[in-house]
Image 1 (tube, rainbow, N blue to C red):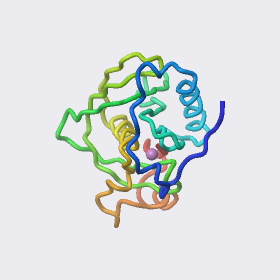
Image 2 (cartoon, protein in one colour):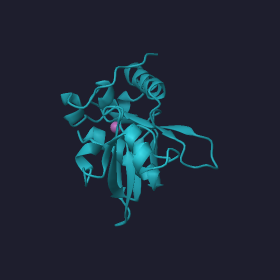
Image 3 (cartoon, helix red, strand yellow):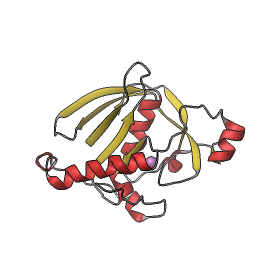
Length: 182
Ligand code: NI
């Protein structure tokens, strides 16, 4: 196990389209090691999610801490080669942060409900729907696989981009559930 170094905005790897992982390669030692390292790195940095390009691996994998349902135990979600589709015209705005853009937050509007298809870390096909902030986290992570950062999607830089401290102080209560980095 190893904590990997996180690539920061400006590093070209964050702007590259990540390659799909062949399904038959998912259970290889190299891919399994990447899963373990990404989970460890996400926890080390207190992230809500992490995409492989953020640890300098340009492949289509994201890990997320799935703690959006207060009734259920938090669980880990690993998505390999994810495909997402919006299920509604309705958009929701949340403050997003990113381990590759440390210290900052931005207000981003995204479809409120999506369907997700992917493989998990055992090469099992997954299909589920996500809504609200969970949908935002999935879309933020999948954006990383396309070379897109949340900062590209901030609609109003004047009122929708801030340092964490100023964000908590002036823009939103510190208990806001979106105070996690992705
Ligand atoms: Ni991110």
